[in-house]
Image (cartoon, rainbow, N blue to C red; front, side):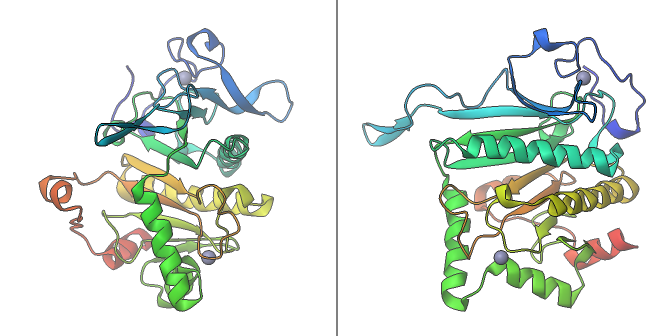
Length: 305
Ligand SMILES: [Zn+2]
Ligand SMILES: [Zn+2]
């Protein structure tokens, strides 16, 4: 295993014969779900493969059944690994903007493909970077899990967004964007289509949100200009993670709407990034509350400096 702490600082070969995600090692994969071809169309620049050890599989029915006082159901769904580059020895913090754009295009292609299947109620795109964030392989990759179940955590967020809309008549994230742009204390970076800031009540130090300026409930609706601007935003984030935080482990999630809600005026998708600089411990586990030892405004000033 070649996983080490400061992954992006380490020199490694571009190809690893043991790695299932390196080109030429397809015999170690299950099967390819979709690909983004390179500019010559001869090879791939990013591709999604079915996870060899899936959390959910598209077998059996999607219904829940009574078992005494409990409900149970099949672990129905789909689990893809998105291989972000054919190069084994690159990480997101070392990618050029055009390589990040390829990653975003692969996210969009996979997401759109699974969104066409009406059995999936939730499509979660995420990345685990580094061992403490749950990654077990070095080769740059993200994941996508599609589920027929919407968990309470997601339903609760969508319900709260609905409540705000019913009370104020506006999308809460559009209002957050407007407030952060005016307040500036937690704002870090922006371009024509995205804003990057630390949320007002960040759960962990240096939590970042990357939010599209255009009201959009569904990640599927991102356009070509926005993809490029998202790549620029991610490039900025990765640079600052490298320069200021020395490449921390992190998780990120693309929080898009659940099925049938693409047109909703109260939902607004966003990318949430959580560096793994602290450990969730007893109080957090027991109470559901988070202790963040640093102030978002101080963290923002540090990253901007
Ligand atoms: Zn590899
Ligand atoms: Zn909005």
